[in-house]
Image 1 (tube, helix red, strand yellow):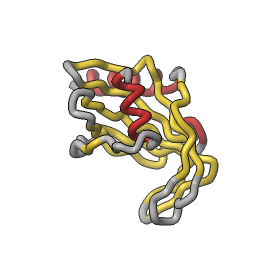
Image 2 (cartoon, one colour):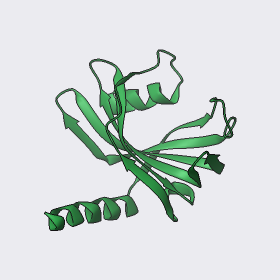
Image 3 (tube, helix red, strand yellow):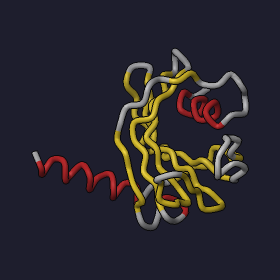
Image 4 (cartoon, helix red, strand yellow):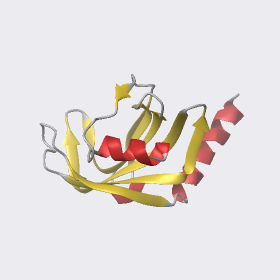
Length: 140
């Protein structure tokens, strides 16, 4: 069992080292908090897209221009997220997130969390990051 887990971890590490990131959107953080106004770019790794029924999982990379901070969070410049998109119901949920000290998912890993987040509706606003990612993943 330990060998299987180790091999899966090695596969994730090696695939992230060779990821071919495709830029989807440049954006600005509009949330309240210490990172409000931060500029960032969002990329996806097309090679990691996995289809299951009407659901698609894909790796995303959020790359910030300035260091991001928060309560109890190690400062970071990028984060990788594994997101699932439900194309028929126009919703998404996160499965995994990891933060990195340098841009483009490089540098020291500051923390990671594997979980299955609740489904959330994709915004009806046409130019939001979530809508653009959902459209990309679902081919719309």
